[in-house]
Length: 180
Ligand code: G3D
Ligand code: MG
Image 1 (cartoon, rainbow, N blue to C red):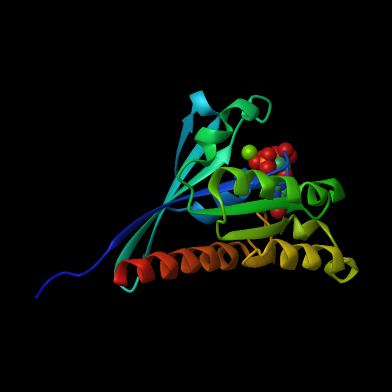
Image 2 (cartoon, helix red, strand yellow):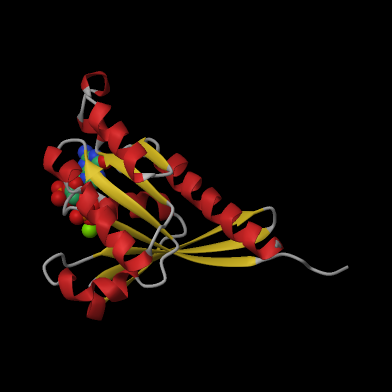
């Protein structure tokens, strides 16, 4: 019998304003198999994670911005070769939501149309019943994000669910291409 199992390697970028919880979310998700490397020349923190779907291997590399100040010059290298993106804002900081559009523009400029999820992080610090979400839902719709989740890197709420949705989307997309 032939072994028809595939191996997929995906680069995923995680962007958003400083201190919204990008690094904490990656840590929370990749915990257990956590490995990290800091690529000083391009100011990125790299974490890897291994997953499986239908016996196929999926290897993920999360690229997280480390120094925000010098980031401007390093954008092309940071974004190059990404297959999906995660945009994070903080439910505690309104301004970080206003910048989501700009982060998305960046992604589109360097990578074209990537499967992207939006995370409203630090949900543990807010009263969910009091959140006004009309604006954000409109944005999700307009930008064509494949998902929107209110996460907490602290409690873990919705973290696995959000990341798994993105991984599933990627797997189905590339598995489909390979089967053609
Ligand atoms: P960044 O990578 O986007 O810059 P970090 O953000 O992951 O470094 O997080 C910034 C701060 O917010 C950290 O606190 C971190 O612990 C906190 N944080 C991140 N996510 C959450 C969350 O979901 N809930 C709560 N309550 N805090 C969160 P410090 O104090 O270390 O600066
Ligand atoms: Mg960080």
